[in-house]
Length: 394
Image 1 (cartoon, rainbow, N blue to C red):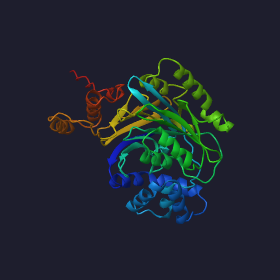
Image 2 (image 1 turned 180 degrees about the horizontal axis):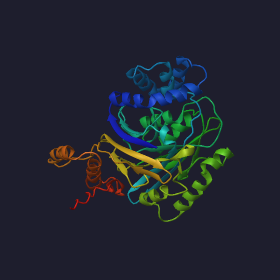
Image 3 (image 1 turned 135 degrees about the vertical axis):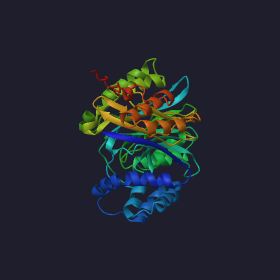
Image 4 (image 1 turned 90 degrees about the vertical axis):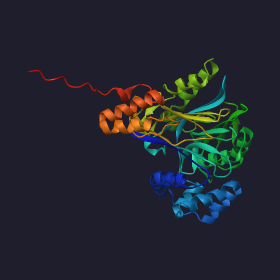
C-alpha cells in the first residue's frame, strides 16, 4: 500500500485546481453518488451557501466553472448535506520555546487520502493545507497564522449542514484568529459531529465541538481525539481507541516534555500512531503547523519529512509506503528539490543517468536525497547490494 504525496501552489483556480479534481474526483464521485439519495436543487444549495458562508459563494462558482462541473460535482463542491464522513485523528495545540504549534495525526485508509498539500490565494487570503474533499481541507493554516485541524467527534447524529472540510476551508479563508474561527464554527451548520482544534500566532487556542443537534461547545482543551463530552457511540469508541489516545495525550501534556519535537515522538508511537491500515484507520501522515513562523511540515514514521513556508510553497513529491510497521519513504529518481542545487549538478545527473541504470540509478538518487535534501533518514533506500561479483579465476 503506497501513496505519492505532492505539493502545489496557485493564486487563482487554474491548473493546480484542475489537477486536484482530476486526481480526486473519480474516487469521490463513487463515494458520493452511491451514498446520496436524490438530487438537491441547485437553488437550495445556493441559498444554504449564501446564508451560512456568503464569501464562499463566488469561489464555489469559480471552482465549478474552472472544471466545467456537472450537477454531481456542483453539489459535491458545495458539500451541503453530504453522506456520512468519518476520519479518526488525534491532534494537539500547544506552545513551546519557538511559539505556538498544532500537531496532528490523520488516520484513515491511505487509499482514501488525496495526498495533496495545496497553497492558494483563491479569495485574497493565502491558505495552505492538506486537501480533503477537493475544495475542502483536513488541516491547514492561513497567512495570518491561524491554524485549524479536524477530527471526527464520535456521534451518529446527522442533520442538514455542511461537510466539515469545506467549513475548515471557509474558516481559514475568512478568519484572522481563534476568536474569529470560533464564531464561524458557532454559526455554520455542520452535518455531523467533529472536533476542531484552533491556534493562532498570538498563542490563543481552543478545541471546538461542533454537532448538528446542539450548539458548538468551546473547550480550553489542548487535545482532541474522537469523542466529545464522552463516548456516545460505543462501537466506534472501541474501534477508534479514542479514550486511550485521549488519556495518553492528557498525561503527556501534564508533564514537562511538550515541545513539538517531544510531541512528534509521541505521535509516532502507540497508542497515538496507528498501523491499523487493513481496517481503514492507520496513520497516513503527521502534520505540524507553526503560526509565528508560517511553516507547515508533513512527516512520517521513518523520519521522512516535507516542510514549507506557506508564503512560498514549492512543488515537491514524496512516495510513502504503509505496512504493519508504519510509514516509510520509497526510493524515487523523480524529485523536485526545495532549494537551489549546485550549478554542476544538472550535468552530473545527466551523466549518471547515462552511465547507470536500474537499481544503481535508484541508489544514486537516494544518496542525493539523503545527503543534500535531508530525506530518507533511515538509509533504507541505500541498502541495495551493489557489490560486484567476484572475478573468475582460471
